[in-house]
Structures are given as structure tokens and as C-alpha cells.
Image: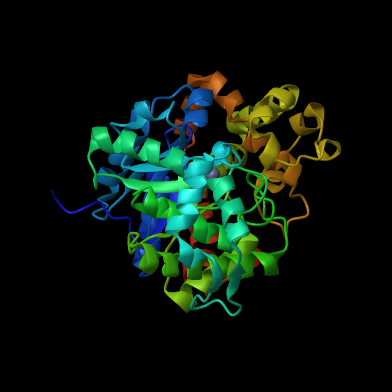
Length: 429
Ligand SMILES: [Zn+2]
């Protein structure tokens, strides 16, 4: 067999809901490479997004290939079948080489008593005092605690194994990157829980190259992190140490790294992440999704004329349909409806007012996170407009593309990988 497909040390996931921005997105990776930081682009689109937009998984690869060719990108890139489950994976087999095995729903569904007992029996090293380089205070665990953790997570890992084997059977082992994700759940996984999960992943023989735990705090769509930053930093640092330890102890892929499903724009955590990467030499995958779609609206609003009109119309329709649009994202948005301007008000907005309210620049007094979250989940409105929306994107390709590139490079890549400025100061223009 040829050498196994290996995910690069730094990778960054971008979503392109309407398949028109791959080139503008890729430009940000080119700019990072010019500054000496190699980041592999990963285009991700979930089953849920495809359903809402009405697109096919093959369109993501097709758009990526065009962008790669046009910009002469000679480095690796990947296409992520994002948040797939056994029922939804089949459509993604041909066009993806990265699979985010989403087993969050299986957490808490108990594995059989026999499996739990066998797991704990196989892993006496998980019971007692566990010293892990990089973690000041050793973990102290009991057999009961490991049983409790196994009961909570073993079934989820077994389910990940089933999806992994399903993909491997058709694509071939080593021909795709596997991520195990447990982020779309309410309670965060602690570093000792992550260690148990990784032991189970090894038992299940999943050659995971990334793992996406649920971190402490709120990861609402399109807006900044809400939570205890010091606690996040401690957990994140410990997770990195746990992964390094698990790679050695359980013979997991040596490039196994954390994947942060950011829900886009978690600027506050970028600084602690960058510091941890610099200190430990660890790699990272950061996944964003809706931030590019919002830059499309910003670009249209900035363009004025018909573009601005369409942006106003999209807001009005999103507001009309707010309950339905928010429903699939209920656990990952916090919209304060009293802060949402009326349709009539927005219908009278200038470019500056619209862009100011939507662009994620916390130093701008016009910035409105509730409006931003509503539009973030409101892409179905544009999907329903069909060609009308796409024609407007093409007519305003330059201004939209400039916003897309700048957003990824200035607000995300710089604070994460270059550290040239803090996220809070990065207005992006
Ligand atoms: Zn996720």
C-alpha cells in the first residue's frame, strides 16, 4: 500500500456555503505561506449544510479544485465530510478525503456492561496516579471513575469505529484522514475523560489524526467565545499534553492533534491557542464555517446599490423566518431578540450601518452580535433566492472576495499562527 494520507501540522477548515469563494479563501492560505506559515486548507461542509443549501458533496471538491488550479496552489488541501454519521456518510465517499466522525449523539448511551468491564480490565494504567509530562498535577483516578467515563463514552467511540470501518471498506485504509468529534454536546470533556476516549479510540483501531472534544464555554455561531478563558487555557494545554501522552502509550498516529470546532470567530481563544502551540510544538486544526457566508453579505452591503438592497432583503426575510432558521442551531446560538432591528429600520440603512452591524469588529459601536448570529444561520434565505443571489455574488466578486480573504487572513490566521497582533485589535481593514 502507498503511504498513508497524513494531515499537515497546521490545518484550517473553511466553509463555502454557496461554492463561490474557494479562490478568495485560498488566497488567505497563500498570504500565510508567503509569511512562512504553511497551513493546509480543508474545505468543510456538513450534511446539514448540504441539506439546507440543496448542494451535493461533490460540489465542494469541484470548487476547491478550480481554486487550487487558478491560484497554482502546489501544496496539499483536503475536503472534509463534516459531522457525518453512519446514515449520512455514503454521499461523501467519492469527494472527501477527510471524515469528521460525529458521535456526540452517542455520548451517554451506555456500552454493554461486558464491554465496560473488558475496557477497564484492559487498561489498568488508567487507574491510580497518572503522571503526564506537561501537566503539573498528576491525575488521580479510581476504577469506579474510569468505569463511569467508559460507560459514558465507550459507545460513542464504538460508533466512530463503525463509521471509520465503513469508510475504510470502500475507500481503503490510509486513503483518508479520520477525525473523531464529540463537540456538539452540552457538557465539556475533561482532560482525564479525553485520555480515556483516546485509549478507547486506539482499542477501536481508529487511526485518528484529529480529535474534537467539547471544550469548556460557549461556542456560539459566528460570534466570540463566551466562557472562562483561564479555564479554557488550562484545559487546552492539558488536552495537548494528554494527546502527546496517548500517542506514545497507545500507539496512535504521531500527528494526532486537537481540532477546534470553533463555530467561527472565537477570537478570544486564539491567543492562548497560539501560545500553547508555540510552547509545545503541537499542531492544530481549526474549523470555521459560516464566517465566509457573512463576508459575502458584508461585501454586498459594502458594494451599495443592488447589493445593499439584497443584503437588506436577506435580513428582512431572516427576521420573518427567525424561528425556523434558528431551530437546527438552537444549542449554538444566543440571540437577544430585543437587540434585533426591525426590517423597516434595516431597509433604511446605509452601507456603513449595515457593514458596521454585521462585521465582527468589537471596537465598532455599531457591531450587533444578535444580528450577526441571525444572519449566520440565515443562509437558507439566500439559498432560496437561488440564481438571484449567485448572480449578485458574481457581479460583486471583487468586493466580496476582498472581504472573504481579509477576514480569514487578518482576523483568523494572523492571531492564530502569526501573532502579529491580538485578535481584539484586528479590525481587518
Ligand atoms: Zn463541530
